[in-house]
Length: 305
Ligand code: CP
Image (tube, rainbow, N blue to C red):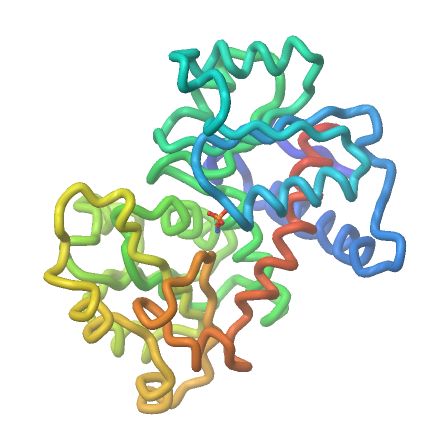
């Protein structure tokens, strides 16, 4: 098997398209493993991984933990709440103390953009970014692209619209980098106030009209409004946002195209996406979650080796 070209996984920018293809082909093998009656392989038997979460998570945290356990790694979990962070301990001191217990890899989520890169520069262990502020969420982008590849056989040539709060979204940024590396076209769609000023420089199409985005794309990846990152009001009300940018069955029927619906979760049902779409045959949202375990197994395995 070939080797991945990076020591850490901080940003999709660290990966070549060959690295991404290697992660996908390795994930294909692990997906087969996790669908067996015995879902475990001994690949990381001598490796200890710390999942260090300074910010809330359901999918990413469980998915990494399951991936590590399916690879037979030893796993320790740390969350900021209830830890000595509340007594003023720094990020580096916290992680160095965890590493003193002989940990080989750190999977970290942090509310500050750049925290994972800072950590990687200050410790010897390998670091995987599980989401850093509004910067990147590389494994989410990998599992999203993997799920698109699974549905269509290929990512190149497809048109993917990312709809919602682009300004505060690490998922949007990582998806744009990943999809471009794999040869897809990307459109971002949302209110002007939720669009970063630099967005056109990323080589994406920009729309402020959800119908236009749906008429253009093969795949719509719908994002949550990240109220927890908004210190100011970016639109008059959630009701108004839903009226102009919410995706529902009636709208999809009017557009009348066979669009695949994705969402990284957590969904705010009835705000950015209605249940009649989220739970429909067009949606691959739970496939994304299933694929997350296989893709994270692949990333952990390739980085550990
Ligand atoms: N997609 C995602 O990052 O979800 P969590 O915040 O639940 O991990």
